[in-house]
Image (cartoon, rainbow, N blue to C red; front, side, top):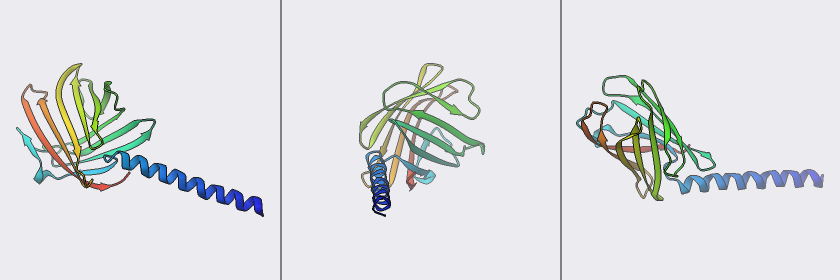
Length: 166
């Protein structure tokens, strides 16, 4: 009976430790969770903006973050982009619907709430971006400047609202 109680107590303690560690990891990275684009508060120059967009950030362990972007673009077509990366400044391939050339992204942390990106297409830098989470953790702002696939300059500011923790 004592052995059973010890085993049960160990299981409860282990579960609590894992839960606290998981919560601590999420607290360290305020991006983890699901974020929905607030189109009305966002600006897209030259535009038009996407009809909808959701970004989900998942901690995959070992310093790997998986980002999935889903939604509907301005023309009514589905958006699906996915990338797994580390904050190490190395290029990681981006998987996306309808991509004609390989795009990559490198990312680095500026501070606990801010990260910087460099996006490339075919090895050439096409845009830079900064993603910042507000101090209250409820809003994420994604600022991106660069040149689109048609060679035109663009400047976008996407404002996202936190939906849930992943």
